Image (cartoon, rainbow, N blue to C red):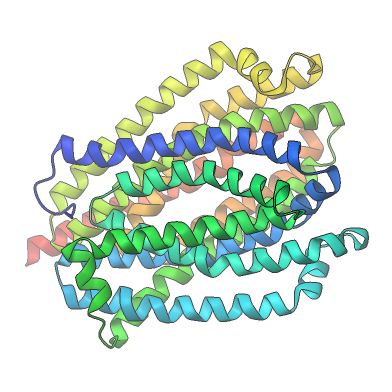
Length: 447
């Protein structure tokens, strides 16, 4: 295994970036297929249970995945420092402690499934079927967090092919496991939750085995040591800031989506179809942000600011080139892509609404690309407080649109909301980044 603080070349960086990018495209594209297969094997009542409980799954994502992603930022800096004791403390003990605490919280929630369903506003008539599904879903969080933490470590050592392969193959196997549990196991909606659980457990086991086959991974896993207070403090700040940001964003998005649900049915249908390709394109841009965060954290530890600045600029330009391609595709082929997703029976009003949101939000993709890259880079530089600030800015903009602009201007405000909620935090992030870099340069000049 290698890192990003030594001999950075185009081949090394883009060799890491491209598998990550391709796996995101493939897994997000397959999600459409998976949804169709799920609808084929589960009845309408089961699908309603999954939709009704989706808020709980989203909250697990905010808590477990976001927290362990935050841990990964600090572990990445430890890798850049080449201090193996710090690495062992952060992964084997410090992160494990917080991970076990998360498992304990999830287990408590699992035993309180009825209150959780009440909080999630799951209708009474669904609860008999929803309870086994919810019980399994609440068990997913800890294993999901463990898998994500291992992915962060593996990627910090410069390896993206293994996580990319596991991600791509895993989503296909998840569908097959679900089908098997329904057709041969005689299970209902809980088959979907069990398939998700088996997926995360299986990928976590494979990642552990892969790490044990490499010397750096064995050193981390087989030689634990007691954590120091600074390591625990850094893990806590990184994990909580990331999780808090996502919770704040999620609350703003919840209110925004409630407002969208008041739109006419044809417009709402078109919006959902228009958002599908936007979400796919937006997710693919995260590969550049992940790579920028890894390079920034490891080179900051070795005070290689010039390397960090050069590669952040290159990755931002690369993401803008992708955005330019996506914009051309959206402007030229939006109706054809929407019909491919929705079929030829989509009403003309719905098609127009889908094309409008797709094209406008595609034009705003450079803003989200800059926003994601700035978030990762700033956290890698140790500016934790900026994450809740950026998340709060995005949430406030969502609330502003939900309460004022959408009632006043209608669907066109919905379409342009992305430009505001991505653009303003991106501008704040860029200003803070340049200010931080200028401060680092001054410190180096004085030293």
